[in-house]
Image (tube, rainbow, N blue to C red; front, side):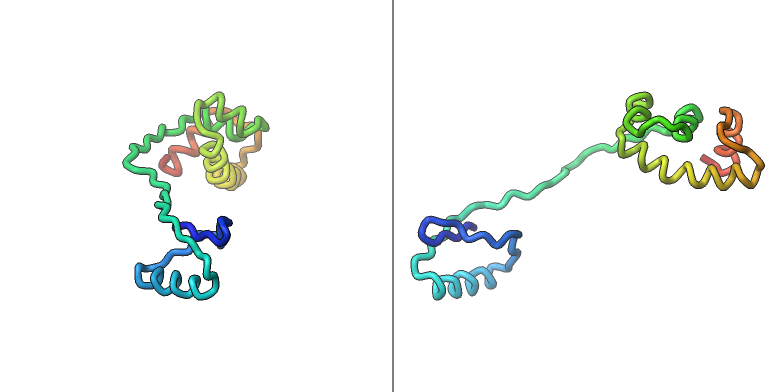
Length: 125
């Protein structure tokens, strides 16, 4: 609903959620404050995702290797055909875990693909 006083909308800055009973009381209160209150019935639209199939591709060793480079997230997203958010999330998960593992094993960056494969087989990815 939209509340108007002198053809100007009252803005509460954020949606106010109320039960039907609360709305009746609120309108009654507002009419006491503003004698020239007008109410327009506007249906509020809600954002719904709906039914959507989420598909995710498994990361491959070559892609993990890219996460260890100095390339930007945007560049890696383009090369792997993934979203930038996906790259950021995987970098945040994979890189620290891999670096701890590599340090324990005595590996230093840059590493070769066989080291990535060894890591993935040990952690079960």
